[in-house]
Amino acid sequence: MKKLILTTAMAVILPFSASAQNDQMTPYTEMPAGNYSLDKTHASLIWKVSHIGLSNYTARFTDFDADLTYHPEDPAKSTLIVTVDPASLETDYPNIEKEDFDKKLSEGKDWFNTNEYPDIKFVSKEISLNDDKTGTVTGDLTFLGVTKPLTLNVTYNGSFREKPFVGIPAFGFSATGTLMRSEWGFDTYIPGIGDQVDLVIEAEFHKDQTENANTEKDSE
Figure 1 (tube, helix red, strand yellow):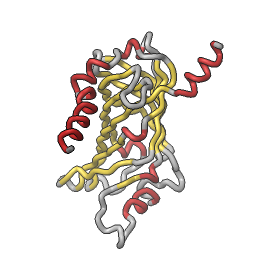
Figure 2 (cartoon, rainbow, N blue to C red; figure 1 turned 135 degrees about the horizontal axis):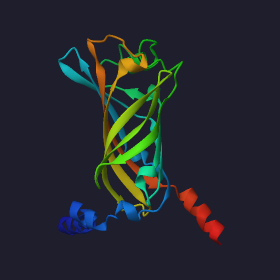
Figure 3 (cartoon, helix red, strand yellow; figure 1 turned 120 degrees about the vertical axis):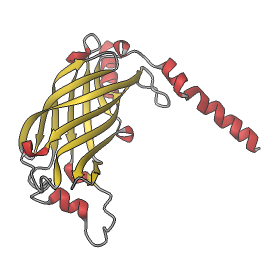
């Protein structure tokens, strides 16, 4: 019985191995145009900052969203809008019964001050392609009421016209970026806590199915 279960499981898993997935992927130039929304179950936004030169303190935002408008005829004309809820800040502070450190950082006026500035927003202005896999996205980052340019280094991981298990068009990207927080007026405890903040982002996007339904309806 155990052998049968194992054999059945392998039969399901093997078709979606890395090599098989690569064979099934669709070139981005052949992906459908339109709006793509963030698949929040496969996305993460992590940031790191130096702590007195001893470690790179790592935390994350657990609530963020993004919308990609894709133009296959000229991917550089695509646009990206990202919104982040800074109140969703999550650290690995170990003594939550003594102090809600996440709340202190998110609500503190010397920190993320979410009562006055309840969101962080990034709006792309320019997309540049280095090659078929890498490029940059430069846009305006609005944080603590200040808007400044930010550039993200983006790696295109792949795309499916029919993503396994869900059967809809999807893209996958990884991105990194660096900002100096003092440029947004966030200078608390510099230099003990570093000025430089490193961003690490993973994201998958699904084609807006409402848009597809409307298109099909209009064609009837």
